[in-house]
Length: 125
Image 1: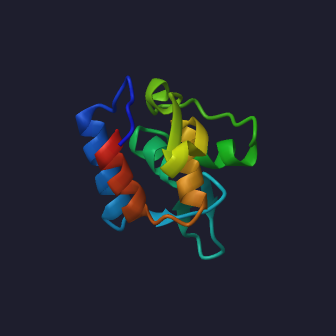
Image 2: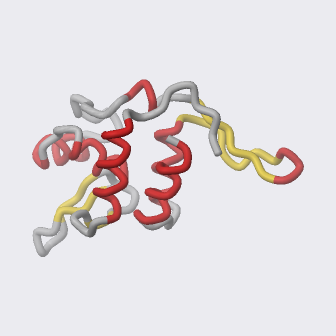
């Protein structure tokens, strides 16, 4: 369990977990947002958060097209996501050091399912 100074608003946390697990969103890897050739909207876990916080599909598309600078007027709680975290395992070997947002992206792009990410959010945020 992470020791974070600031946690997510409980309603937002519940909404995010629900959005990740209810089958509404299709998971994307290595991008915040993309549209497939079949017009399916795919998002990473952070794209889902931005969407449920009020960012439109067009805003997510524009932000993704302009990465890494991005042009998204973020609606998610940046103060929570920018917190520094260090995850360690046996013998204090560091397996991740950086922002919480970066770790969530790492989980998403590293092959963790939305269900696994939702469980991490429930336990830690």
